[in-house]
Amino acid sequence: MNTMWKNAFVLAIVCTVAALSLAVVNQLTAERIEERLIAEREEALQAVFAEAEKFESIDISPELAERLEELEDFVVIDIYTAYLTEEQLGFVFQTRSAGYGGEIILMIGFSTERDQVVGLRVLEHSETPGLGASIEEPGFLEQFVGRSSADPVAVTRDIEALTGATISSRAVAAACRGVTRIIEEVSGS
Figure 1: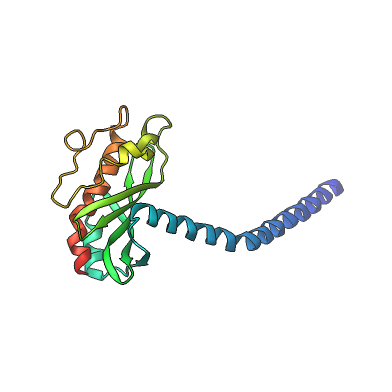
Figure 2: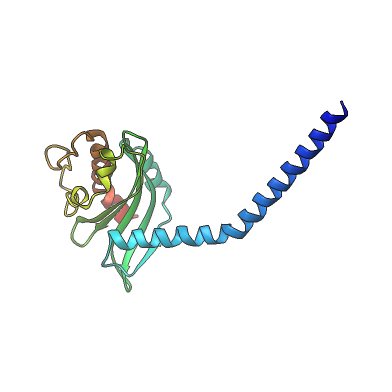
């Protein structure tokens, strides 16, 4: 019985030390992690809208939020306005759609001046390596650049699906198509 209490006491001390160590490490790294996330977001914004010099997050109006909730194929996570000095060039959408292996998080740049997609970047995915993971390949993503709000952006008709990864291809196409469909509402908000 005495040994059991001794073991419990030692275990309690080990757990306390481990918990305190994790708290200290979290405190020391939280700021650096946040800085890195901001840098990654800025890099992705610049990658999908190279012409822009600055980006500002949009506060989504209740009317637009209601419209965005009605979308079926994808979800808008964030919207940023892209500027060259003070001139508004268009928008960047961070979206989420359902792929084969889970959610696909994309950033899509759309020029309102040219009425077309100007860039795409896959931020996160859990697609199958060698198949669905090919959604990150420039050759696949370039098919979406230049698509306007009038384009259907349909897989097999407008977009060549990745071999063995039709669901992943359709998920990217759905997000791109969705952005081109809601651009007028976002521009007017």
